[in-house]
Length: 358
Image (cartoon, rainbow, N blue to C red; front, side):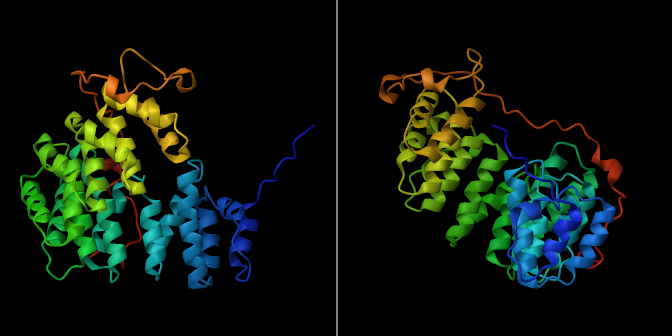
């Protein structure tokens, strides 16, 4: 019996759907707006300007979610257009949608958002985005001047008494990728802050530094009564590849907070070692579909020299208590291939007149 083929939706048909203000948004039709070229963008802009704000918000958020679910969907030109939208939620969606972009032409607009956007949600999203560019600068992927620009903008934000807490928190986390000596002081200060949110951001920043000096502090916070702290400590333990945290991370697989459980699974995959592997095998074989899927993925990422793949269905879970932890060689972090020279794109035209600080 032949399967019925799904007809491809034309960009203009999808655009007409977007302009139908009374109709419910169709994910299938919004998907057809992906991979737009400059001509498509011009047509999109003409329709977009008349779309009511709530429909623009829903559309922008839907595009972000669809792009996360399907890597083949590319809304980059549309996300860039969203950066100039009058609505803050749409601007945030534009920033989040460009998360994977390494285009240096985005750096100055993001700094402009951080410094002067009237909405704290946009400023926080910009700080988060600048963390990615700070990491690229540390890898030598950005001109040194850009790294300095980003660092100074984030640093000023963390020190601003008038700035919203959420923006300062995201700035502390983004600064963690910077190799400047001031970062340790910033993290120490954040960790002593009275606000629980800032203390959680300090733990997140500790993990991002990949500096073993923070291992003991992060390990202690795995015992925190605050689930936010346990969550960030679990993630940071994975980023720091701290095998001393293995036992506690295994305990957190049964934490009362779901996000803490998922963070523990991912951290065990980063930490590695026999105990971590055994715990992940058991979790992958469990009836918890969410944790099982995460554990399976974590197992596949473990880079054990004696095994290329885990045939989970053929493996019987080993009791965690029967496994002795050994001093296995530390797993090497696999960095993304960072050989593309974005500096050559420094002068690319970008419409940021209303976003970049003079």
